[in-house]
Image (cartoon, rainbow, N blue to C red; front, top):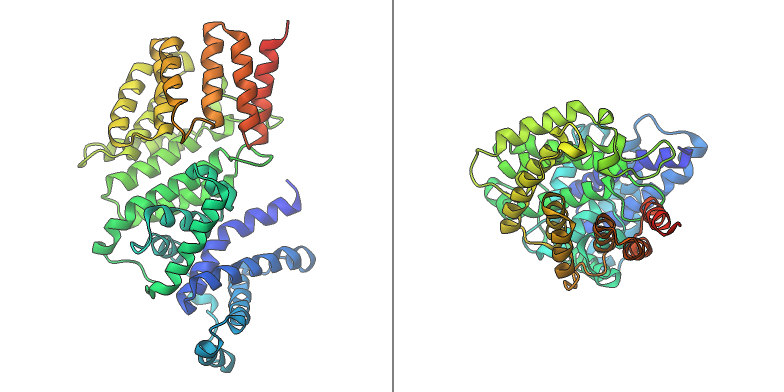
Length: 413
């Protein structure tokens, strides 16, 4: 890991905490985000030269607060805001003190719920939260949501304007207010975790800081709502999935598929915790998609080997999941499970149906699954073509290398 990578790993989880603290104190969500980004840039320049401060979070908040003042002075509504800026300059409104910064990340959780405010559409809530809390780029968010990058940029900008004009206070919503926002909060954390566990772009297969931050926020949310089956299910799903991360890459950083992984490297403590959580959640009330996905992950994790995986049970769980979450990614995973339980031809038939769905038809995962199932049927030339098509569409360099290697191996005499 380079010094730049280490600094990035330090700054990324701090970014939403800085934004939350600045918004809590001063408001102006959209301008506060710009100020936060400038504080992070200043840290990236100064810290390698001067050293990391004793309290990095407090340093960033102070710099972001000063920059927010500068940015507000330059905005068009200068006259309306002059009074506030003058009060800051006179010290009547001080920058947040170090002891005002919550040590447990509560500001980030409040920021999460703020971005999921019901004045925004569900799509805008999702996009804004992934940007502000997750720190994902517009390109990454567009890929996660299966839309074009320009459309996602417009969506994020509109959401910022709506938050600014809504006048909503920066506080944890009441129990009655939380309900409508919780589903979006859970989906955002799920997408944030997925981007960390299997990065959609870049040179690394994982972005551990993102998946780690998603797990941290899920733990905070579970502490707040311990009786919620879906909150518990999501935390269990993250733990059960992340437990496999140590075995997902080889010593040289190449992708290792689950069937070939050394299961002794899996995190047994995380698996035990995840299994206990989902076991406790399933009997409580309605069973939602995160509980079902956690149950599927538990079946995988508890199998002593890939050959002894209970694929019929996984198929049954996916069929239950499709009743409550009929999205194309779930359908693709169901097709894989059907192939493993009933033969590759049965899975291929389902994949071909998905190829007509415009939401996922050009996604690299469809081509990768098609290649895998064609390989299992012995159609090596078609499988190699599918792997090459998948590699051409994948944004992650380790995934590209893995898919191209499989294609080359099948094409070799």
